Length: 265
Image (tube, rainbow, N blue to C red; front, side, top):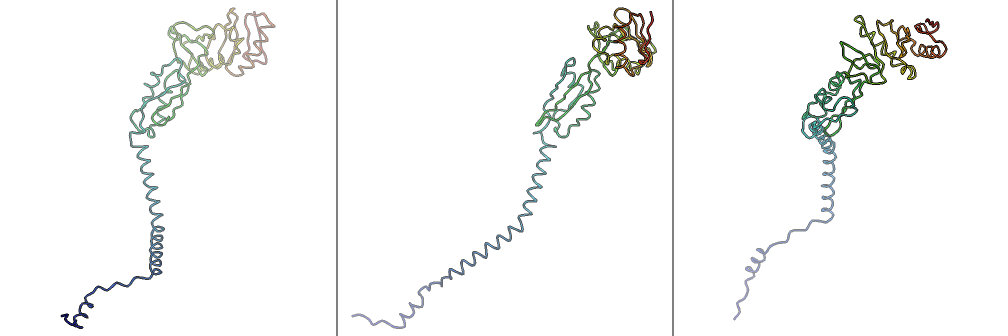
């Protein structure tokens, strides 16, 4: 026989049953999300310049370290161009490029000065050849005459610089003869005269006598002599002499004053 249900007991079970939580409104959720996104956007706008500055500083510091302190861009070799009589090894030895040092910190002016201290070098251009080489471009002196000094034949360029030795005089180069009183300035004046002579006239010159700055004379291959004076007005003197050699058969020509040349037997 079924027992009648106790109304109080039924109410007790209903009181213990779980109650569903109220669901938030979807519009409230969307509003909260939009608010969170706006908050994040504001924070990002505030931090964006700071992060950009930090990134830039990092790039600068990294670049400075890479170029000036790391071994990745260090000097690993030297390339020499322009040499003819000198060897690349001679230039590299004089240059004394510090291999292993960061290429950016190498003193190019000092390297250039050391290379230009070599007598045969007229000028040198030194540059960085990234990532790891030093380039040395050499311009050598060009001889215009041969000078006999202490019994040795030496090459002289157009600036009067003595820069190399010869076992025998090269064909086509006039000789310069000097005396004990001949100084470096007089040698330079003699070199200027020789360098300015036209090819046709230079081929007739056996040697150039240089006593002082104002006492320069030419001795031609047929033993005729030319009093030249100083290196001033060399072009005009050469033109006057060329005309005299064609017009006058003389033993001695004086073009030291080109406007009033003289000759004598």
